Amino acid sequence: MRQIIILGSTGSIGSQAVEVARRFPDRIRVSAISAYSSGEILLRQALELGVERACLADEQSALAFKSAFSEAGIELYSGERGLIDMIDEAPADIALNSLVGISGLMPTLRLLKSGRNVALANKEALVTAGNIVMEQVRKSGRMIIPVDSEHSGLFQCIRGENSEDIRRLILTASGGAFRDLSLDELEKVTVSQALSHPTWSMGRKVTVDSATLMNKGLEVIEAHYLFEIPYESIDVTLHRESVVHAMVEMKDGSVLAQMSVPDMRIPIQFALLYPERESCPASYLSLVEYGSLTFEPIDTNRYPCLRLARYAGVSGMTYPAAMNAADEVAVTAFLDERIKFTDIPLIVESVLEKHKPLPGLSVDEIMEADAQAQSAACAVVEKLAGKG
Image (cartoon, rainbow, N blue to C red; front, top):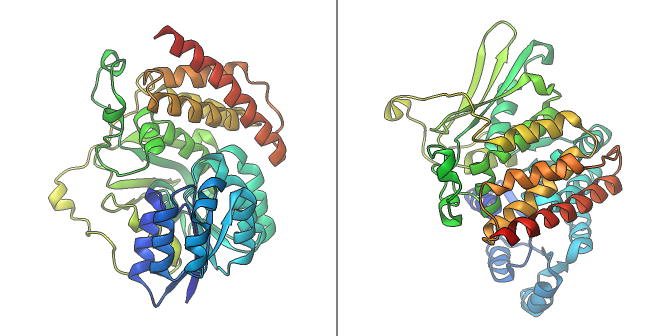
């Protein structure tokens, strides 16, 4: 019986992980779950899964639901400190981290330090502090098993291969909701349009990042750290069908590809049960039904966020942390309808231009850069919002 922790169990990835766990009651036991403030959903999940520990990061929500969890015999933790305590005390072989943003960094480090493997769906932990996280992986002797469909694909292609035989990693991108609009049309897109992804069902922040292709920029940085591949050997191609999730080109010219229908339950299940495989939780892929698969170059004029993310990754130090913080502020402002969609890369670029980097060798430096970049991004948002 494999014991797992699910962090962010009420979100898009977390709820699908709960669904995977339900499929294998004789293989998976969920020992702990967490959410930010969705106490009602968290309690329902805890009761259904027989969970003994749960955490609400928002302390006001935790206070409101404390008695309900207590009556159910479930220990409820609260706040950031409570989340770390739950991680320390809950039995687990592996934990799925699907927290959003830089809030996933400390739990990732704590899980590794406490001897658990991490099924990582939190890009920001590696984007903001890749060197620190991977050093903890080496020290702990544990594994990060990627959950993003692209990195799961790379992980599966690379297994058993010699790293010196790898020439290039290729990530695929759907292009998001606005891949066929003109640059002029992008000026007028709405929040509801941005949240209508053509292929995947994801959270609001990730869906907007998919439309700007910032998510692919984050994934390039993530792949750099996960697989120790230089940035110049990591490419991105537009692939509308989202069937080929990643490819690995070997030095002899062979290209290995990982394919499946676009359903996140497949990489989630792979990560939670690794190295074993079980029957598909979604439909099986029929290439005949698709008929054809297309691949196109990425237009960085349409997707400047991809260029900015690469710049931050290559620059190193705390540039990726600053870039990530600026993007979080900008996307939130867009979702709140305070800025235009096309303002998002302008805010990120402005913050990066003014960023005074720190070495990025400690969590304190990462958090300081994050705070400074958030403040700088908020100032840019105020200026842009004032124009409207």
